[in-house]
View 1: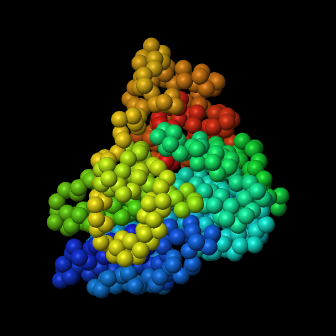
View 2: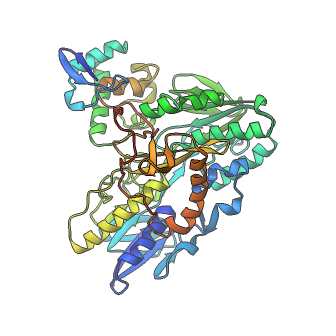
View 3: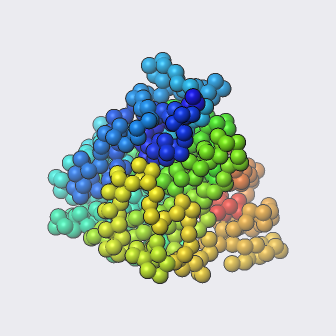
Length: 415
Length: 102
């Protein structure tokens, strides 16, 4: 018997376990997946949790529920990969050997990277919402918050789900209007980028949203430290911004296991070929999702499209055939804009988000780069799709792994 | 869009960034630096070379990443290219403007 080993049972790892159990012969291949966690979180739901739009039970389920029959789950912390001996060492000193390895250990927040962020005020006046605890603690804070200066802040790129901070600012506007206290809250969006929108078409089509929702944008702000005592953030140029409530997206980093294994870049991301998803570490090691360093969005939809191509490439690798250089960076994301509306964007490595209809050209029912109620319904429906189709490795009808330009208004794009 | 720098016609984006690094040369970089009010020194060029090298390797760049590179500290990066160091140095380097997904 040969051994295929997957590290991480989050969105990417679970999808790969489901895909590969179908794709590989049970007589020839054992599949094992390792994860120390007991819970599988629906991470897109962390955006809704702080505003009491989702309940905690809607965003978490038992991790083993989604591991298919015929795949062995090991619940143990991973120490490191010994690539020279094709073996993974666990914290309990056990070893697991493999013929093929898939790294799907994801991305974590690293608030310790910013001076003064992790301290007494963490989850008191400084919150993240990219973790279950952060989103839940922020919900409890917002339930009783009396208002003041709210900063929605990004420390540095790349982050998983780059649009979530903007969605948070939009939903905060709705939330405080509905509570009858919008006049008591100032909302500012603080970003290291040149603006809230950075692509030409999105800037043109969507800048009105910030004005309409009275959200001030503070661009080019590269945070150096948090002065938690005096409630202000300071950037490298010496600029200071005061807050009463800081909702930040800390530096994102790959798992420390990657660092312990002796590879990975400054942020612990695994060097990976952006078209084949084979790592540059060794030919029998592949990587998927937000664990990789590929220049695509670190979002679940990207992982979903990658999974179809990686499954094909694992089969080809086993058969000794050349790998398909097919992954194009395809991402497809709903963006909540508040008040029951949402946008949809569809893009890849080279094509910026543009207007149009999706998935059926000229028909929709979803609209690209435009606020509609139908898009919002799509975002809500996605939770069901995630739990019932996406992580089980079922193909989502009419949406292909590589991006399609059908139905898109492309003639004026410059990118 | 097209623009002429140092006697060479190059393709640029609406925001004034070169769209093809192969069209870049040092004289073009110098003229863009003038537009940005940056007086180029050897230290500036070391940073430019690092950025171009990372871009060719398809490594996404951030201020912090440049700071961890060993080429320049973040403080010095700000001194060399005041206000928006990554934005300005990227433009002089002939590489695209740092962007998010929308």
